[in-house]
Amino acid sequence: MKIGYARVSAKWYQSELQVIELENQGCDKIWRENLSTDENSEGRLMAFLDQISPGDTVVATRVASVAHSPAELLFLLEEIQDRGGYFRSLTEPWADTRGPSGHLVINTLRGVIDFELTLAGFKNRDEADRPHSFGVSPGRPRALTERQKYEAMVQLKIGKSAAEIGRMLGVSRSTISRLKTLLR
Image: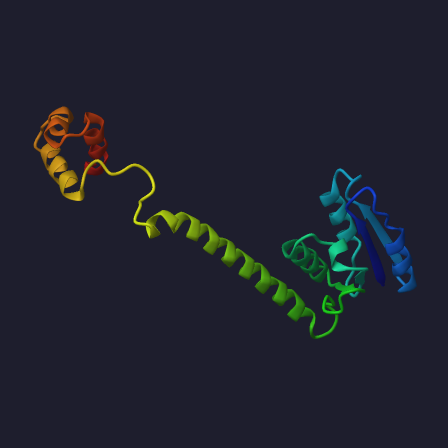
């Protein structure tokens, strides 16, 4: 069975042109969804997906009418595939999961999404590392060197007070007190 999927996302777009195109393709059923008026679009999508039986083909006029991102498209294609169905876009011939190339479409989308996530990770890492590349560490400068921390911890172990050690090293009592958690 061919199931047409006509989906519009703005109130000034009409689904009638999509419906006419889907009827011309011989769709047995046509599902209409208007995201600007439907409060529960996720629930409507799941209700649509529940109608898909093994062997059914979901036909859309274009990929952009069913998904706003590669991740959203991948979710839709995987859900259709899990139900034993297929997807076909009239405008984009590459978006056809029927036949041997169907798994290739889904795996390619997974690769694109992984690539986007990798790029996003590099971008975030670059922004976090930017101060280090200029020789500046983010945040406040450290009050104690590693050697001073070690000396302070030794003094704490032999029973000196945090205030005494702080005066000796030129830092506050609370800086030394925080080292006590490392002794436990």
